[in-house]
Length: 253
Image (cartoon, rainbow, N blue to C red; front, side, top):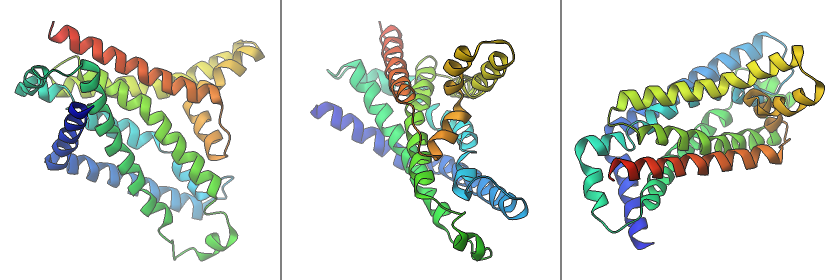
């Protein structure tokens, strides 16, 4: 445990001293700010069936799609390229501890970025006081449910992207693979749902529809959670971390 804590602190330190960390944070914040402004404009111009926070969080897939590959592409790839991983492997510490330390450090940074977005959510739009007074701007269950889902799904997206980083020392390649995998994950739900809705049975549709990420986010913002989804994300996260451990072992076998 002591060696794991040292390795975890090292990963945190590496993130804090790296200029790319702040570059990624700036990109992530800029994307969220643009989404905020766009959503606010649409909320003012058109009548909406959602609260503002619900409408804002429905676009969370954009910063995840663009930010997570940038955040994770250096996790293993850079260490492979610089030879740092060879030095770490000489220490008597298990591969899963190495994987876990990198995952937890990266996920902590991911969670911090989303926590900072609360500044946008609570920033009072002084130009539209009527929306604030009418209660259509913010609902607690929207905020808690939406952010809980973002952090829950982040477990899978981070572990998936770290796995691709463990496959190669080329950071661009690992980031590209992570981007494609996340994009395919977002796209698969609506495609399968539409296919089954048009040609499948009701039971098939009832089984597949919950796998639609956009459907999951809408439900989360309404305070509705399917326990199957929680189990699915945690299971897939552990599975990708196990794949990463196997990849690390094969890399140095």
